[in-house]
Length: 503
Ligand code: SAM
Ligand code: SF4
Image 1 (tube, rainbow, N blue to C red):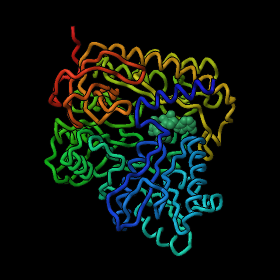
Image 2: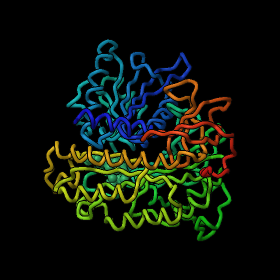
Image 3: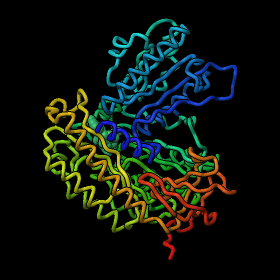
Image 4: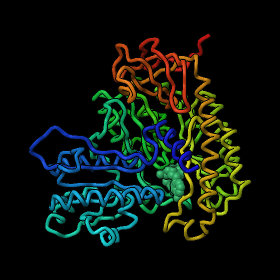
């Protein structure tokens, strides 16, 4: 059974590169004189985006990135604490990095991100080979911490800020395909879901200046990028008030007075969408309690805002949602889904996160999660067995009382249901033409290109004479649960309709 679960999860993970539990490694920069930095990043998109800020801070300090840990002067692991297995993975990797340090004394090892913040200086006691421990809000301090570590002292900074957004730092794109990029629009989270460690590791929620976001999007577009994903733990609660910036601000952005501008998430989406109709805009993650019809109408209004929403449910049962402290119930969640369908139609892609075996969850309550999947017909989902995290509200208030085998059985059940629904959702696109943004060559064959449609589904097709960054109309002929396959019909301008049924 365990093998089957792992296999199924693997299929889902391949369905979307940004899925949790992927590891990303920095690439070689073509310079010979500089000191070398190796960064390995674990966990969510936010962490990958943070590593790009770290690379930028380190470049200023004279470091170039490398993909070869053996040849690096500094080794960073940018870590995730969301589930216990994420932390175990990092501990295992640390023992491997320690071998490098033994072979090459003087190499520095740093733990960054959520695990650094959660464990703080305790990490230095537990993992003797670690020289530097830096939380998510302290990356500007890395050069100083390295200097400290070079003198033989340990460098620790886990200060959580209420203001830091790294707005002025231009990220260095790591593992970039040159076509799609992340833009971090806010940091932290104020929600306190009872199962979640994020509010403790990433601190209070704060939104980044919209003009710096816009500038980053414009620069990316100028550099040839065709898609940006706006990132935050809860993008719908984005809010910023301040002086108008360098662009002409339209009335739709809630201008209250000439000197004070209020920008909410709908306003920000609109600002970024107006950079160019050729630039696709995505965003993640939406929160069911906060996503508004105003946001949905903004998505509808702009063809280049992708019709795809990641709306984590976590459970389909109202009692479980209440003890998870999600602040919505099943009816509220379904009402939001109905609004998405009403405003954006049946073709809008929707995905979810779901947790099985949360404290006290009964078999009937688990069945409510299954029935939620059946009702919504999500395109795909990220599903997890509950993992108790020290310090969270759930760890303090409830007993982690669902045995591991039951959590895993429930997980296998929802994965199976989701796989069937994903297949159905993909099959309905066979015989339609989908507008694809080409991201690169398919891993399986040099002769094929891979890209994604509006709804974030991967599409593979023969490359012919197209190139990376092209928008191509592809006739869908076949699918798996995770991928669509087809052939190119024509190159298309970005604004062309993305979903035309063919008779
Ligand atoms: N901010 C996003 C939201 O509220 O939906 C999610 C952020 S979290 C990094 C990603 C997902 O990890 C969550 O949606 C949840 O499904 C899962 N997760 C978080 N804590 C977990 C835990 N203790 N055990 C299992 N899964 C967990
Ligand atoms: Fe965690 Fe909830 Fe915040 Fe998401 S909204 S990061 S699940 S506390």
